[in-house]
Image (tube, rainbow, N blue to C red; front, side, top):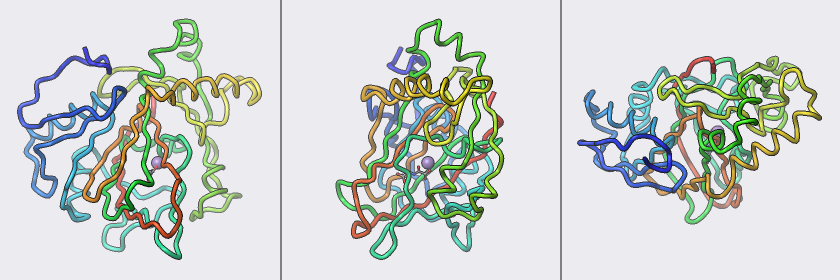
Amino acid sequence: MTALAVPDRQYKRISLTPTSGALGMEVTGVDLSEPLDDGLFAEIEQAFHDNLVLVFRDQKIEPKHQLTFTHRFGPSEEHPLGSRRGLDDYPDVMVLENRPGKLGPRNDFWHSDISFGEVPPALSMLHAIEVSPGVADTMFCNMYKAYEELSDTLRNFLDGLDAEHNAETLVTEVPSRVRVSEVPPGVVHPVVRTHPKTGRKALYVNPYYTSHFIGMTKAESAPILEYLYAQATRHENIYRHKWRVGDVLLWDNRANMHYAVRDYDESQPRFMHRTTAAGERPY
Ligand code: OGA
Ligand code: MN
């Protein structure tokens, strides 16, 4: 068994190198500008579900290649609240841009993408087109492990709980198509969700979008949520990705949180294309 408690797999077409003890694999043997046959894609998908983050280095791809790859996992989507601009030709390819005169969007908070939505995206994918050396890393943590390492008693308590998620903080802090007064009502998701592909249970709460447990007050929920976030984001449960031009990285929103480190200013360019593939209503 690996650190991720999944069976060791035999891969014939791809090679995998761990990016940390907690999650993530760097994949070699794949050119994402070429069509992927079903056998090759099946290995990639398996590696993704076992490891939660996949990194493909030195990819020379266009937006259409990123979309084609995204569509192998599910339909692509625009940002539901318009917090990210899409390309004119490919509105589902969103732009993350930081350059002189234009400070990029903040993502320096632990979150799972769009968990305030009824049907949050299964995965998100970034293609690094321009980076500034040494800065603007992205961190990922493993929410399977965060759940599995809790005591039986706390897990039993959480198994029966739901929590409300809402976009209030996002709309307040990030320019969006909707105004604060129009924030969609909060949605309710299970605190522990079952991954539809692996059958494993993962914690599904995050400090940015989760407001409280259903049936409990915010004051009662807060210390428990804080404890869960502290456990989930222990150094040993994190992979910190240092970006290089040509990286294509995808992460599983069903079983991880991520955090974009904000140690740069607008003088240090960063340009990425972002896509998401649709998921299902968490259960
Ligand atoms: C995102 C995100 C992280 C980054 O696009 O959802 O969190 O490092 N990005 O840009
Ligand atoms: Mn994000």
